[in-house]
Image (cartoon, rainbow, N blue to C red; front, side, top):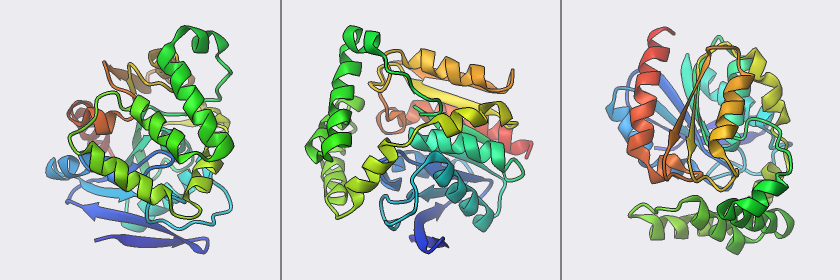
Length: 278
């Protein structure tokens, strides 16, 4: 059953399943908590209480928020943890990976650790060489540019096709669900607002993190010419020994959708270590 948390005159939608230590799931822009439809039940079955959140402006959460930065999203996630009773590990994808970093740095008393899936956690420089050299990076960049400039739902769907190179069995229905949700008035505007925010706020918090971090990248993620190198830069920005990086071969920007079993196999040992020490 969907629950709602009131925050600053708006509402955050989330589902809670399972019993045990708390794990909070946060998806990327233009998506919803349904993105974790494979991972959430597997985590609950493994003995965790899983709160699967629609971040502000997405899914069943309300529109009309004052901002859509990673700092804003981090505040929402910390509020969910406090409401449900922490401590918790946050698993955040893309923009929510950066938000998870900020949450860990600013609320270490309730955030025990973070798992970042294909995260945008650092300010990005324009990679002309990568665009010329790497076809998938160039293709993804072109589609995202059309989303940012024109709010093109067709381009968003083309980007998702690139970003999930091997589709799950339910993809036809899932894509139709995404299209219906993103066709609602205001949803594309929220996506564009998120896309215009800089990850620099998250990058600035990397040295302040005191909780363990697991970064999971897909080797063919179209959002970077070299996803492994991006993951290594995030780890390098953390205090020494705090972060670890895993790269899933053949996965794109949505490893929890494309390769949920591999994400689970990486996440479970991290959760066991991290929440056991909470």
